[in-house]
Length: 195
Image 1 (cartoon, helix red, strand yellow):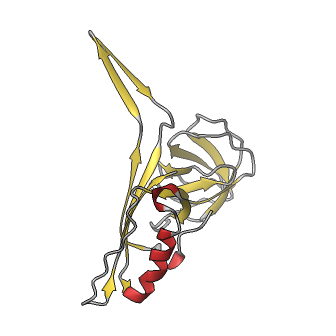
Image 2: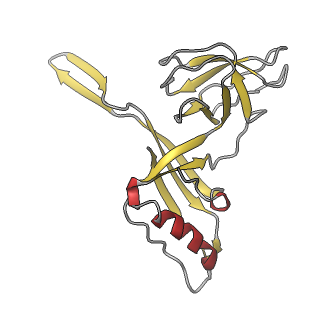
Image 3: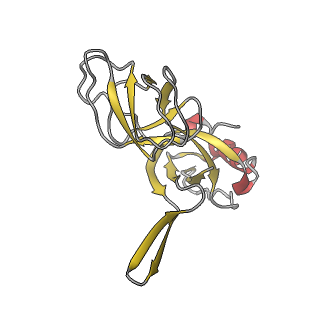
């Protein structure tokens, strides 16, 4: 799977939103809420920094090579990682469906070693998760990692956790780049959804 070109991945503007497929059924005095299919996907929309139009041809070629909205690619999270370290590990395994995991490999006795809002990925499956609560590390470099959404797959002890990397696809077939010829420099709005 191709990786989004790194030089275009730092964003001047970035919105990462959570899309959950939820259906609400009301009958009489009762309301039932149900999730359908894959219950969670991230939408990632970002504006690239301004580049010379000639440089943007590389990005245009990459997007065209994805075969419209059907091709998938990986993208390192365009937002700056705020935690103490971009790589740590699962301390005790956890099963799919949990939203709290004991982790280690953090700097010892660190305040906000894990920062709410950071995106992470486990090595055994491509789903990206968001840290929902900041946490301090203990004298052993451990902390309780709380994530959203809940785990999609089991994780095992010593499994590496790293800075978030999304597996995405474009949301439109149209891959035309609008370049401002008069100014010579342009930016591109990239709209994607988790594959």
